[in-house]
Length: 121
Image 1 (tube, rainbow, N blue to C red):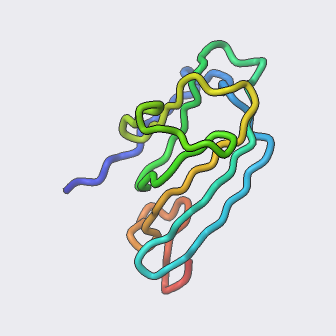
Image 2 (cartoon, rainbow, N blue to C red):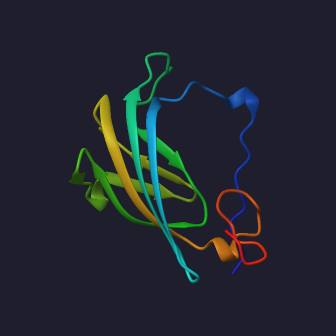
């Protein structure tokens, strides 16, 4: 199976993000076969944003295991995943997003993000 190529983002297409991240908390459970990543993002709506009510996150080569907003699980019917993008509609103006994902650093050859090289993460 062919790996998905990252999409190109051009400067001319830039717009201020719909949300700002005030605090990021990450926990990594590093194992030889996989890595579990738990993240807590403290988000608030960006007053300078042009438009958009959805929170859109970008990521590649990861498996989403769970999502919660302010400690309440987000139902799969409340989010959409399309390629590298995860969209959550109707989120509060100020909230904490908790995500758990599974990644495989030993398979990451892009040398971006978390990867394993010469036996070291």
